[in-house]
Length: 430
Image (tube, rainbow, N blue to C red; front, side):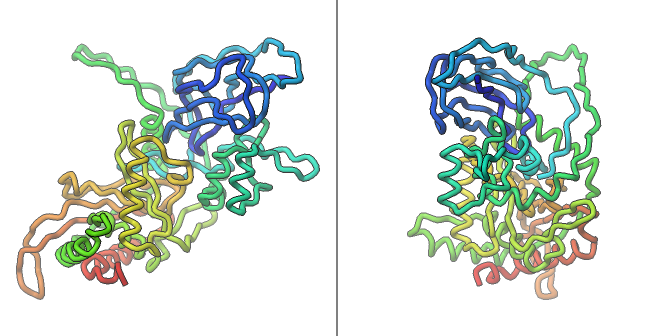
């Protein structure tokens, strides 16, 4: 019987995608694990692999087609031992994104970050069918799961007929399922957003939105409408941290590592989350998720928008390790090469616009995270040092907190501990 090849959910926030490029053509023989196409999601361009063997008999969606809904049939595969027959499935047309979408409760579209994914379980098709307790998964997915010691019996596959594929295993190995599945029940219908037609005689050009930009727009609107933000700002003296950074960089020069101020702030944020666990949480309706690990989502600007790769367990990593990881993640984010588990999840975010000269700003929370730290520029200011007026290097830092999950007093304690860690930075290397 012909096998329908459907548009996969390659990211938990993916509602639709662009079929960027076919890697096969009609008549080609494919095996399980072969790459079939490149698909642009709301996060990156990802490769789509075959889960069944057979011959590609019909390609229903042309290269470059936008707005292909998850689950839409994009091609047909015929088993080698079957007679090929034309499919009655009509080619998919590009669909403009005008319908209402559901709230997707997980990482990454904040000020200024990319869209947050929802749980893998919620985004996927129904759970994979099992015959005699056999998990239906591609050979590549099984091999990855076996190497990582992962149990696939509870994983919902996004491949044809619920088949578990590589992306599902990578998301599971990144901890996304466990961290975000409890929030799946929180999704509600978002208001219908109609496209705004602008009648203008001002010379202009129409620029088509990327999938990432569409998701950013939706997620930012949802966050501001549904999450009650509370903003708390402190001024932090940087002189001691800058001095320590200079000394550390001198010792790390032979290893080719150069710490940035942002690397040190990531570590300070992670340590603060561990010291003030009331802020390392997610609001989940009738429940609260209390995290015991600090995974920091770091805002990175990319050509198509913004995305937040994650430094996992940052509180227990050295500054040099954080620096190396952030540089490598940022480079691959700009090339669109991040894997799902590298940008899905996170317990809190940091957005640093100080490097662009911004003195102070309020960032938008990235649900289901309950806080984000907005970092302004360090600048010389009059400041009281040892009870005397002096000139010091000071930056303004604003924490945005989800008031459903975090009380003002807990947020204030968080900002106090963060300030102390930055102003006495030896605690970052202890």
